[in-house]
Length: 254
Image 1 (tube, rainbow, N blue to C red):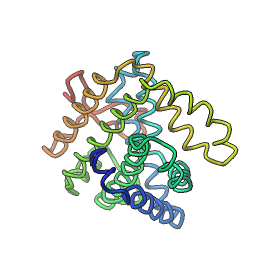
Image 2 (tube, rainbow, N blue to C red):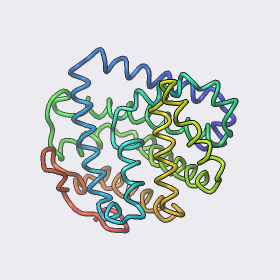
Image 3 (cartoon, rainbow, N blue to C red):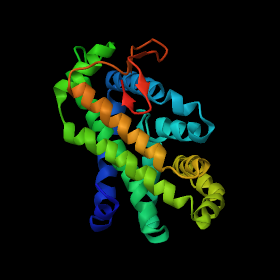
């Protein structure tokens, strides 16, 4: 969904927040599910580190890779951040520029979609609540289908990154974030504040994110296509310390 779509659909943020709240409640109510999702999150975070290890070694991109893993796409639990957004959504709509609100909404939408896909993938594994191998993950990814939603995940990542890349060129946003830091933490909104500050810092360090975002888009799409084609490359075995099956190059998965 594009930024324009969020502008023309003002209920999108509320709908995404409701989806995330439902998933979080299910997770709290089912410790076995929570444990399975945590194992899946660790696996996906290891895959992300493997895919972008070369970029992480470059000072220009290291902070952005960490931000993607911990705040957007590594499978972490963003419950507190999205609860913060839910608390201040009406105020954000009145006080922040529409494009900033749109980027926050896209981050919540990405979280909701990732939750849905993770739940579906778990159910496609041989043992949804147990351990799994890299090959099991690849087979489950392929058997569950949902290619269009997988592609939309990648689109959202790019649009969130593009939004952040625009904001770092506007000095008043950095100043506003610094001024908000103490009030936000006193109000119990530290998770949302940290998300915004970390994103701003990571993208400011890059001094232009076009090449970075193009590389992420290219690699994620190549990996998605390889999985749907029946390949198993580019994924670490659980417990392998992140050693990948296959390798990555600047042009995608090899």
